[in-house]
Image (tube, rainbow, N blue to C red; front, top):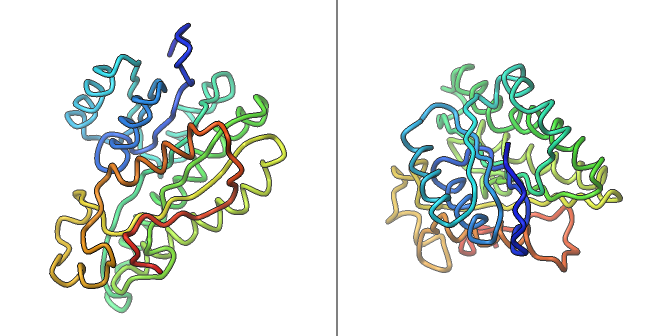
Length: 249
């Protein structure tokens, strides 16, 4: 159990889904800097999760790890249902995501199913347990990590684009459902960010498409997530904020 601090800077617990690497890790670290305890989930890379935990705790806050597959509804239910009802987090960051890129005419059903189950079904599996506790508490913030691919589509990513566009629609609908209970739901849509997921991107072909002429860093995304999670004067609801260097202008 994460214990509440007496320190006036303490902001509660941030549940970061997919928090061990890349954008999720950057979000966990930035939220830790802002005074949140971190509850981070990951699928199976124990070494990466342990490294992230050490970095978070070095910032003087608590970090707890949970390992499960977000696409497995029963595993998510076992891990979160009872706990989220009793101890809803102040913030949920949904950052789980996978790619299985291929042209649609060659795309295998497994490639479609894996991406949709993790990226979109996973959000349902997690959010339905988190939202109930937030509604009872009459407060909470949900930040969904979508993608520029969900805004404008990308060739070779029909599955990924569909899943990320689905997250945008789900978040907008949820924002309408829960806004009256002071639960804020917003989306950030990163472009080409320097992570393991983009390590094969042909940079020389991508840069001319980006007005800022550089790839983004995970910290660029984390700064916006942190703002949406911690800014006290907040009147943003159901919005999609692009973090893509101008790619989707």
